[in-house]
Amino acid sequence: MPLPYYVSPEQMMKDKAEYARKGIARGKSIVALEYLDGVLLVAENPSTLLHKISEIYDRIAFAGVGKYNEFENLRVAGVRHADLKGYSYSRGDVTGKALANAYSQALGNIFTQDIKPFEVEVLVVEVAEANGAKNEIFHILYDGTIEDEHNYAAMGGQADEIRRFLKDNYREGLSLQEALQLGARALMVTQNKALTERDLEVAVLDRAKERRRFRRIPPEALGQLLEGPK
Image (cartoon, rainbow, N blue to C red):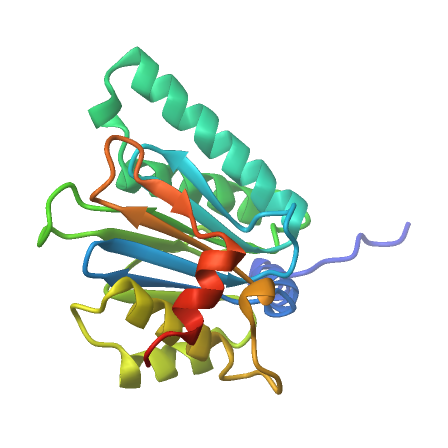
């Protein structure tokens, strides 16, 4: 009787991690930047129908990179989780931290228990109520690892190079236009071509808005912001 094929747990986890990282590296990058009035999210995404950046709740946004159907399933689950909690308790009880922890637990369970891990990374972003208060940016990896980011975050594609660029060029107190131009330049760090408004998906969490803070920036307005003063 032949012995069953054996793979050590350490090797299995290593193989899963490598598989997930390769899938995520094929995805186009996303950056999040804090600016004076909120948080800006910029994704390289020429599609006008398949969104990588979405609203989850009043002050919370979601961004995903990697395999579309997998992070879309996570987005839908996050919306349901937030709606149920807000309905059962109060809208103020729905927080980005709680949602990020739920995503971390779900991705961690999938990574350890399923044969194939999710090939995704996600951002959960919550804008602060008051100007000067702390915004929250949570970066959740394919294995459930959760990272609390400050000022900016990047994921997908050549995220390490983008982070280095942002580290050298980011400053606090950016206007929306300055943040958008910086985000677009960051995404072009690893590109051999310029990105136009037709190549980008952009949204903001604007604390100046009432109740629902999420809004998308349409291509027409995006083009004007990108072409304005540097």
